Length: 428
Image (cartoon, rainbow, N blue to C red; front, side):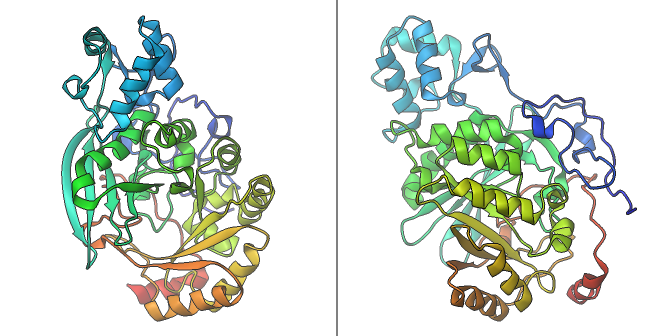
């Protein structure tokens, strides 16, 4: 029997989705609790509260950005106002280039209606803490730090593009329980889930703060801090709010939710949402993926990929994006390229080859540019749709896999399989 690497942390939670009622990172031997920062043992990972009608509240007030449109409409009507006023409010929260954060920005609304909102509604879920510029050589990647009501901090990134496609990368959790070995955020452990309002407001802030600087924010990726499908209820709700055609009006195909491979939640997402899906693959064998992505020990490559084949059969004109972070000497061999071709057979997909972004304490190194191109060419010659994604924003720890700030207590590094120890030793 192998050595158990993760300590038990008594959480005392009763999650709302059954697949996580026992554990987050199940291993074939002992059952393990999700790794959470010991500094936050007393915090529930579910931070939201609600009123008697199920509406999200902050203090004694309803949190407006935590409601879908129909929920907002019902709440407005419950206070004696017409549905049309709910639509006017919705447009001022999310549309018309207003992105209102307070009563004073609600121009054109009935005075009595505004008075009711002042007494019963809260507009802001986040507090802006700082904005950091990170150069990628051409345009500036903008890293936004937000402070939450409980004092925790999350990070959001704006990724400009010369082609007019500007992306906001949003976080879905404070930290992450998945403990992917190449990810800096995973070193934090999980502190708590973000509410739907906290997720949505990241996109609202992106448009509000940077419309004049970078132009319209056209795309959203759930690739910031956290595993989105571990917080599936709030992520689906936030995505629904983002794509509403009278509000932020993001195209569903331009809102991409990424997962490390939580199969039950993946099924639910594909059945309930029209937004795009990205799957972080990062290995072509269970041996490697068990090591670099421990979630594979519960949902292995065969189960994950077969689930995608089955579920995508019910979707029309839909491709999943496979993300593949290239780690020198670990998953970047020509044999890996050929195995990857076989693994994705029968799955409508695109493949994104990502340059690894080093961080403090990392045991991995990025694959060389020449080898990435060679890897890409093998996939392309086999008919795969494949892209190379260079590192951007890593000079300010704003790049993929670099968000967050681990504390004194960190998630454990896993034992390196013997066959890869020499390769990692060369990286040191």
